[in-house]
Structure formats: structure tokens, C-alpha cells
Length: 463
Image 1 (cartoon, rainbow, N blue to C red):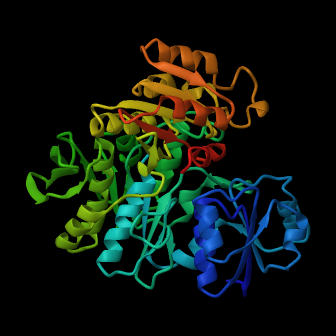
Image 2 (image 1 turned 30 degrees about the vertical axis):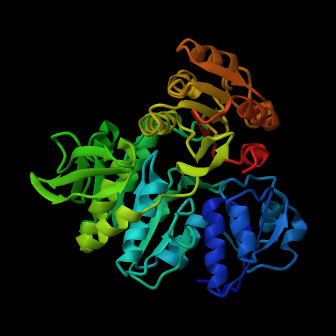
Image 3 (image 1 turned 90 degrees about the horizontal axis):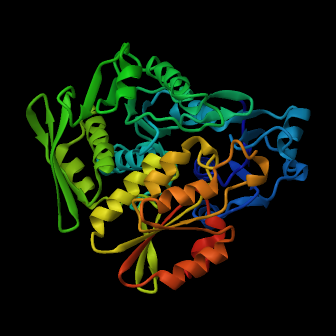
């Protein structure tokens, strides 16, 4: 490895970028970074950690002479810092490469992949392994409750990370997860997403098949066999598979899910033998899958069952994943990162289960590279219609999209209304805040779904 002392991050406010930067700073490196915006929670964390940052991108931000430049996957050619990096031949790499060389090395790498649930599953595993005293290194695309941050550089033998299928950088179009050297690979689900880089579901499955082929024979693949796409990509694996789910084809079978007094419990069997019966914070079916994968991974590495059970019982979740944010006119307000139709459906279904007597007000921001397109035109309407009142914000960077490719807002609203629900659209977050305030009361609950800041909506609601 090069003699590196000074590291500059272009796009430092990305969740993984920011956590990596903070960890390297704590390890003694001189770390600085730039971004176009510093919204919570990462912006607040960087400030609290005393990180020196540059507001906006400029060639001058590299005047301090870094030894290495980390270029985030959201950065494109034309970015002034990326252009200077190339022109002056600074050493550079993508974040996944940095992780492989400086953090993973020869550790047992536990990679959590899939379209949904990566952050929650990775958080649960990191908390279990931390409580078990293994001192793991982990990198999580969020900030778990009960852990100091989403990134910790531990001294133990384990590296725990989300295996994102999005591309690595403008100079490396492979998925991030191919860099993570999985010893234990979790695949919870595979659906079409990231329509800006994948042609179709078969394109995505091809990349997952390649990921499966990287797991060594002495490792393990933990796969949700209730998902047919997961079965497909693991069918020719060289590694032993711990399949899990609720169907009879699964080696690990989930049974007897019950909800009571704010808690969820279930039984986990392995080939008809009851192995463990965890009790967790009340959650929906999709979270039970996440927790099951976490348990199997922990048992594969021989962690103590009692430690697993104790951690699961007190685990509070992850910021921005069904996170309680406060109240508006007596209505409970919850934030979630959901932006894919399946995730939206899962979140709203869980809201229905947890608040059966409340009117659900849902605000959704079409911000991801797929949901601002018409790729999920019909699916979005179906998923959002689980709520009673639906407020849709502006389409992110709509001016860059053609009429033929972008989400048809009028059709979306009309589709929702055909389900007998109220649907409105506002381009300004201030208008959304005013509308929520006008309809929220003690008989309602509010869920705001965004993978960004919703243009300051939470602040406008007094939160």
C-alpha cells in the first residue's frame, strides 16, 4: 500500500463515505472532504466529529495536497475535483477499493446483500458481534441505535458490511459488492432496482451470480429461499447454503410469528429442530427475515445463543428506518428510508399493523434514480395506496428527464384515488408541511418516506 497520510473524500456526506472518513480520522489520518450539501444525519455527525469539510466542489479544495483521493460513486466526470485529480495524477480510488485494502484485508468478511433490508440486517449483525465481544469492524449505510456510529474499525477478525449492488464509481462500473471479499454472504431478496445502471432483472441477477461465485468453499451463503430470484442466483454455488424462510424448501424455517405488547416473537427451526426463539421489538414480516439472516450468520461463527437473544430483545433499530421523530398536532411522526415500491409496501403494511385504529398520512419523495422514472409507475400507486392520505413531493431533478421516461405524476395520483384514497402533490416542501399540519391530529399517524432530506421538510414541521 502507498504511504498514505492525507486523504480527501469527494462526496463525503454519503453515508458510507462519511463513516469511512470518520474512522480514518480516528485512526490518525489527516482527513478532509467536500460535498454539495451536508444534511442530517451524516452532516451532523461529520460536524460533531470535527471533520474539516468544504461546502461545494472546487479545484481549490485539493490545494492541501492529499496523498489519496477517494471518489464517491455519486461523483461524475466534470466534477471539478475529479477533473483536477485526473489531470494532476493524484492517487485515487473508489471507496470499496479503500475498504478492501485498508479494512477488510484478511478478516472474515460478512457481506449483506439484497434489494431491501441491507442496513437493518447489517446493523443487527454488527450489534450482536459487538455484544459478543468480537470487536468487529463494520460499515453500515445508516446509524444504528446503540452503536456509536455506522462505522467502527475494530481489532477483531470480522468485517461486516452492506453489499450494495450499485456501481462502484464512474471509473469502475462493477457493483460495489465485488470488492468486499465475502466469506459469509447473505442474500435476502433480489428485485429490479437502479434502473439507471441495470437493463432488467436478469442483468441484476447476473451480477449477484458473480458475487455468489466469490464466496470460498469454507465460507457460507445465507439465502432467503422464499424468493425465487435468490434461488436462481445461488443454484450453482460452490459454497454450502443455509437457506431460510417460511416454505418447506428452506433448511432454516421461520414459524409461529406472533405480535403482543409491542414485541414480536417467532421460532426458528433447522431441519425440524427448534434452534432459537427470539423476541424483538414489534416488526413486520420483512424485518423477521432480516433478523433470521442475522441469527444464522451469528450461529455460523459460533456466537453464544444467549448473547444473540439478549441483543435482539433490546435492539432499537436504525435511524431513518421506522424512526420515531416526534409529533405534529398530536400525531406520531415516523421517518423511513423507503423508496422502492416493495419497501414502501412493507413499511405501510407494518404501519397498518402497529396503528390499526389510526389514519395513516404518507408523504413520499420520488428521489431515487428509479422512482423518479416511470419504471415503477403502476407499482408505486399500488404500494402508496395502503395509506389513507398520500402526499407526493417533487420529482428530483425533473428537468433532466424526458416526458417519456419520468414518473407520470397525474397518473400516479389518479391511480391512488381509484383505491378510494386521498392523493395530493406539491412541489414545495413548505406546502407539504402546511398540508400535513392542516390534517394531522391525535387520530392519525404520519410516515415520511425519503432517501434524502425532503428539502428540509422535518424542520418545517418543527422536528
